[in-house]
Image 1 (cartoon, rainbow, N blue to C red):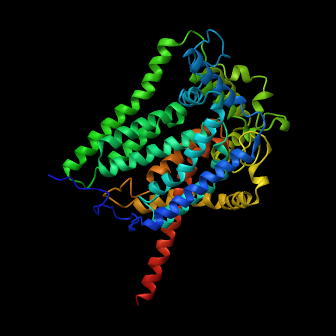
Image 2 (cartoon, rainbow, N blue to C red; image 1 turned 45 degrees about the horizontal axis):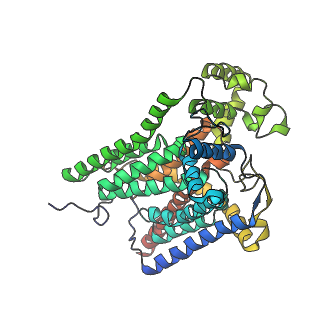
Length: 464
């Protein structure tokens, strides 16, 4: 018996956007142009931006991990020596990428890392289009791809030895593969998506819960209204997805249990430090001169981040003194900061680390795109925010559920999880950069719903 093809059959639930999404040859040519522009902008940033001390702070740690992997086969943050002590303070995904660049590029490892990220960042534009075209009209998906191509934050992040570009690229690939797997009920796509999300987790631990949430939504929504055989293929593929994904965190936990010596720095230590760093309202402890680095002047910071019991005790003491200020900080200000424009701790504006010269200052045409995106940013945020109640209103009365691939539910969940995680931890704008494609897709979905609503009212009015 032949299986129905969800990509071509008319199985959309009521309330979803029913657009014909035939991608023409002209559209492919236009998408290629957009991709080329994305890559050219990122190459321009690499060539025309001079970063002050690019291997510093987090980047410096990642490089040390990469060196120890290459020279000793040990995942360690100890300065390269004869016997580095293994630890798990950082996740292994990005240091493994750096180690591979060192093995392949030798002395040219640094430019190899940057240009690999340039290509990954540029390819996020077509990936955004192909994800968007599942629930947007072609023009909406194309605009989202253009926004990804021009986004100064995505352009700049490709030039730094930091996780943002690689994580964003791998996560977006995995999300696209997952949507394709759910739509086609294809086991290989489920396996590939599970592996992709697994590697994304090894780059950034914030990806740990998202695959489980995605899978739960897919099983709860797409299992309705289909033939039993079709549901069977979905559940079987979901099982493969879950097994493959879980191999990554389980393998990492087994390694840590077996290899780490007593007292070695671990991920939980970094999580606790990040948790304490996010507790200072307005990013200030007392002295405004330490704004964005409040933990540097807090005399209790060593004790604060030493254990969860210490954290709970000190935080409760401070919360009781200023409860309203802390509630405002956590519920309102931290979500705003994590999606704000200016990179607070880095070089300012869109630069993750301080720069001596900027691509956007030297090249007028590039600066035009930066100014355009800066003025669009608050509008994009409002449209994406409006997508949440709009999606709820569209589907609250639908007893048959909805399709995860014909609606923006997975990008919306991505934005929600990202925001909630950083409401708890440190809410720096840098951490939201990998999720800009999902942000633009949700914004364009709101636009398409509003456009269709106005068009429908217009046609009804003139039908009389």
